[in-house]
Image 1 (cartoon, rainbow over the protein chains, first blue to last red):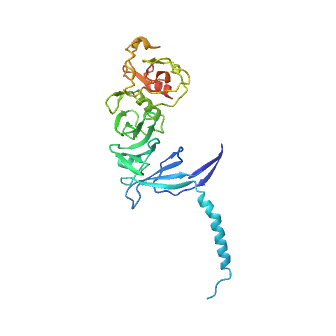
Image 2: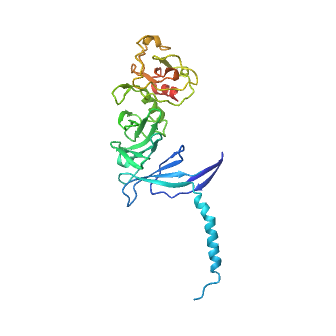
Length: 57
Length: 278
């Protein structure tokens, strides 16, 4: 879920992004505008994944 | 075959709808740009940490008991460090070039070299189970504590085998705290520095290998550099271990090659060191 802060007390949900089952931890690299999401191994996949998202302005 | 007279109208509406929705789709806040496949069985993954300079991502692969190192430049799993049973919290210190790995349940915190991922040290505490290296400041393996603990540890060895002061001379963030701001119950010693710390000085860790200054005993002598220590306290050269119960951490810029030795009257040395670092 992407939430934008409008001001000190107002927040707006910008986007709800479907990820994967049990994916819960992520890390934002503000310097490069990347968000890393750890995705546990899903059915039919060969291993866990790291998904890299680009944060749009 | 008879066609509905309303069909063109629907086509126009559909076209308009597409025009309206297209900008919305482009306005997504997150765009998936890369998927990097790792190794391991299904199950829990935990914290992530980033080495921005090398563009490498660390993952606590809890279910596999490994520390996974991902090269973001190539988009591939670089290494899986085994033996990290219960791995949960990660914290990478760029200025120290060290990776701290908290192992849940075991009360352990491993410290890895940031370049080779070689295990350098393991801190343990039977009293407080390790939970997270980053998010539980109150726990023994909290990030500031571990950072201080590492900075205070004995000098590491460079790849050439030469002694290297903790931190390899990398800069640490300036906390704007002068050396004189140590808590009342602590004492600081400049073990070979050139001048006392000044407020606002940027703090540097002890010098690089080869740059390491000889013991304070050379020239001025350790006792000559001793300031404010209670009677019987000991001071030795930079980067050297001091008597048990003492603590070392980096000095400010004026003491680039020096190490502050701290003694804490309360018997708990880490908070005192943290006061310097943080």
